[in-house]
Amino acid sequence: MTRWQICLAGSVLSALLLAALFPPLNLAALAPTALAPLLYAMAHEPCGRRRFLWSWLCGFLYWLLVCHWIRDTLAAFGGLSGPLSWLAVILFAIAKGLHTAAFGWLAGMVMNRAWAIPAVAALWTGIERTHGPLGFAWLTLGNAGISLPLPLRAAPLLGVYGISFIFAALACGLTLAMLKRDRRRLAWLLALPLLWLLPSPQANPQPGEQAVAMQTNIPGDFTWTMEEKDRAIRHLSVMTLAESLEPSKEKPSLVLWPEAPAPFYYYEDPEFRLRVSEVARLSSAPFVLAGVSYTASKQPLNSALLLGARGQLSGRYDKSRLVPFGEFVPAGFRWIEKISSEAGDYAPGPGAKVLITGDHTLGVFICYESAFPDYVRQFAASGAEVLVNLTNDGYYGDSAARGQHLLLARMRAVENGRWLLRPSNDGVTASIDPAGRVWDRLPEYQRTAGRLRFTWERALTPYSRFGDWFAWLCLAAGLAAAAAAQIPTYRPNR
Image (cartoon, rainbow, N blue to C red; front, side, top):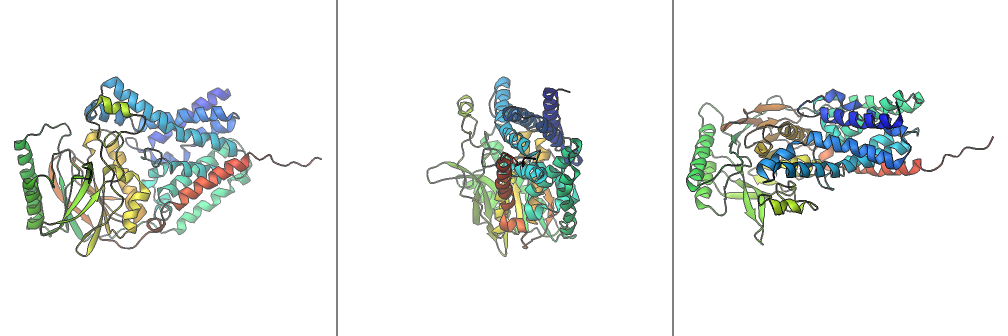
């Protein structure tokens, strides 16, 4: 094969392998090999500019494959026509591919060094950490490890980025073996058996608490009238109370309503406020629900409200990490706002805030915020004994995004050693234990109420305490390794 063919094949194959790790295929066992074709190609390409372009192609294809559902969401709910929705998602993939481009460009510099394995793993991990600050966080390579018990042991210590490091290191080792490099360069992988020394994520086998979760199943394009709104509120309230007061079941510790595309305005609608206060009071349980709040300058906030067991407003959390296109329009995409009046423009909240209910504390975050490991861990670090992720996956339709979003929540539970309760508009409504396993799951696409078991947890994992120090250290070390690789090796004259 020519160098051009090797680079094209490596870029495309890595993109396909990376995409296959996640829903809908879920071929997680391929995670240690996914980067190998790209690394093999980069080892054959001496030109930095061409490495950048080939690696960008890999990233572009990956994001286009994994997040193609963005096009359907924009077309169905963003008011964009077919061609314009495709243009938006293509521009998105072009921008996101730049992260992979930077990785391939730098990785090619270190592939011929004795320390290629740790350098490549550090580069991949550190660059992954920049996705959130630079625009859009979603799946990382380490998320594929949620169903792999051994690498998952790294998550409570180093977060999902520790698993990414492991997979990238294995891929680099495989690449060096294919290149028939000196076997001594593989010695770095001898550290991986140390994973057996880390404790396996565990959960109480008999969770003693129960939450009543309402799955509202409200269509995102529903046309609301006053009569329809009143009917929906009454129906949801009756179903919630019927489940909460079921004589054959235990009294719930929490009542949860999801984020839903409905005109439920606690602050502005006295009838709605009275109705949900009655739900909390009659259930005799703290009640968490989503709603719209406002800043002092009247900008809307996507909020989670906590009502006490007597029906009083006890606390509020305002969403801080907003959804691109759904809740704000990113820089460079303002033309979408001109085309569609439905593109949201919410204000971000001040940050992570724990809600207090009696003797316990809740870490409530909303929808897309589950994609930010360091942000979610701040709730646990601040004392949250259970994590609650209010979400509306109805905008994703029947796409792979639903499974991808659930996968993110499962990893957040493992990183923080917390039960995670996930009430969703039309599914997946579930409870997730600190080992990332789904315990209770309500049937999707149905309006229903059910029980989610959980346990209050107080012990902090190292990741909850210290956050992403490892990922940021990887970024610094990876860049330093790439710079050091440019220093000519001294060879004495003979």
